[in-house]
Length: 118
Image (cartoon, rainbow, N blue to C red; front, side, top):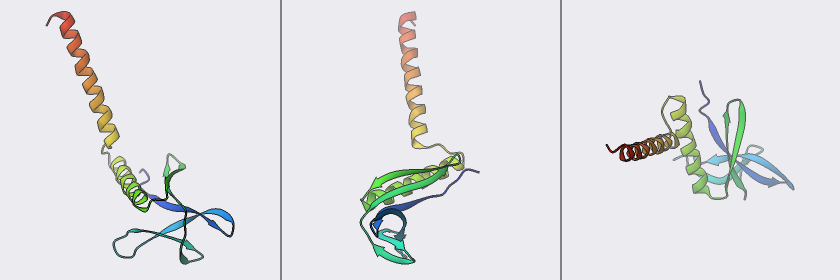
């Protein structure tokens, strides 16, 4: 079965060194905060959010920037994409690619009909 887990981390500067730390969500509503876990304590810190996940045996990362809302939205979208892929559904990109191919095929058929006089 495909991996369906993705998560957010935050790149922050701790004691002069850049490191990644797990982010903290609110207990109610599961909303993202600007806090990270450092030694089992929640500490508010400036930093860059990073989306991480496993795909084909590789750990992949995508930098999302400093915006809380953008990071929360990217996490939700990526979770939905991974769930669709794991359950055999299609993603928006796959649907759009199919539609584009179908449109190009219809356009090509129209040209052939014009040339053939049909």
